[in-house]
Image 1 (cartoon, rainbow, N blue to C red):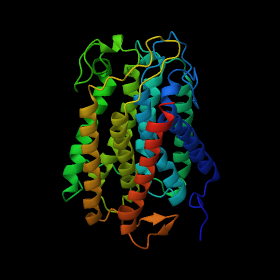
Image 2: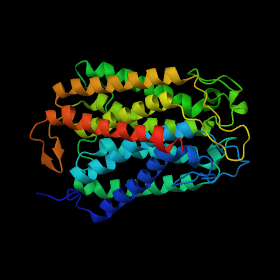
Image 3: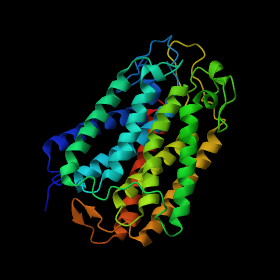
Image 4: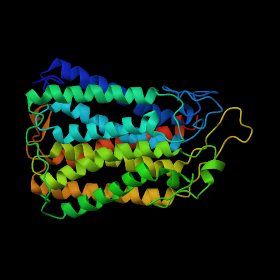
Length: 358
């Protein structure tokens, strides 16, 4: 019986994956549980693991707690990929690592001052953390080439899914691509700051009158995470399901975490306290809540259906746990996935009804 993480033989690669996981974990926890305090730099009677560093007169002060909370859920799905690789080994895991590198590269670009436009971050700490995580993760990828991380690497143009799963993945990927493009290039319009938008967002001008509205930069951060998940969906679509259980698992968990965070967050709708503001607390604008709940829930159901149908095409072939074969392949879809989802739902309930309101 192997001990945990023994399936990665390179110690430097193991350290790099572990450190990049720690960085992602800290930001994920901070955003999921303490984003409402983080955006006010930990001021007042609240707790934040990583304050945003904004002064009270900075434009980002008090803005976008709900968006960061969703980003925390997306991050949780991404760093599950680190744990899976550490636990199951690197062979063939390019399907996880290349999309993750693409997403973090995009995140580093949107956080870089030259690309922030008129909505600058309070400081560059998130950029430095992203660059560090990206560097560590990329270094691990390079070092894992000797352990077969690129086994099966192929970028195909045709569709290799054969049953109804392909329609679910196509629709899900199309929706993800649309939101990615919109939030990367039309974030100002979506945020209500002025300009065009592909997807109906907040009423034009409301950004300037709502002191807690998310900055366009916040939506670009979400889009960077979307890049990772859309890339994973396209890999499954063009490479087929057979044996690609690892990327299918991360995609399924990531989209589930994302959808549940959106749904529960829009049900709870926590007010944002801004210390020293006589008009505080402020209630978030919920004009996009219904569409966000419907779209995220629909995408989650598409991915659940797609995984269910991909099982017929052998997606779970070669599936392992701690490097050993699953004795019963049904255990993941009917036991592990529901159990992890239930656990994450509990964490989201704690975040929305306990830690975020404080």
